[in-house]
Amino acid sequence: MIAGTTSMTGSGSINGNVGTSGALTLTGSRTINGNTEYGDSFSGNSSHVTGTATQNTNSSYWNDLYSDIKNVSDAANSTTADQSLSGISGTTTLSSADGSVFDISGNINLTGSNTLTLSGSATDEFIINVTGDVSLKGSSAIILAGGLTADHVLFNVGGDFSATGSSASFAGTFLLANGIFQW
View 1 (cartoon, rainbow, N blue to C red):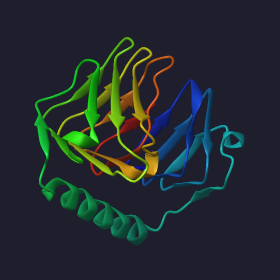
View 2: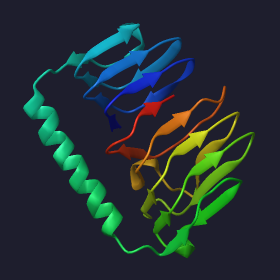
View 3: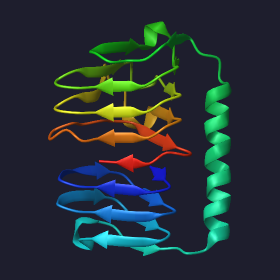
View 4: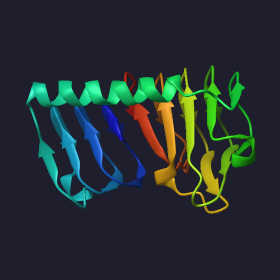
């Protein structure tokens, strides 16, 4: 995950690396099982990072990285969608039988115990382009089924990402070229 500003509060963990050109705030018992790199500042308990926590203030590095991220985001957006939806606000399943590229021309807004299930085999790949925000509240979740793995799922989010539920969970790679990640 790479975002401009990253804030994580409460409990839970991310399995993977986190990079942010801005401030990284880690409070409560949130854990990053991986490395983290941040630009502006790090606040919180660094013992909750199982890898290394490194500050990188080289603006050229972040500008080049942002350019790469923007290029990936643009490429994902230009991939022809197999299915287009105006938004997702309740329990929904997207299946590899319906295609592998999904365009959401609004928000993904899951509350309560609603789930977004992505169903596919271990060899399937999904691109989910979201023009708006992704919001998870309560015990809502984005889950993978049928053998699909998180490294084969890209959420290309045009807006912000927030998971504020006490037990909200999600899987996949989340690319926020211009948004804020809050969990």
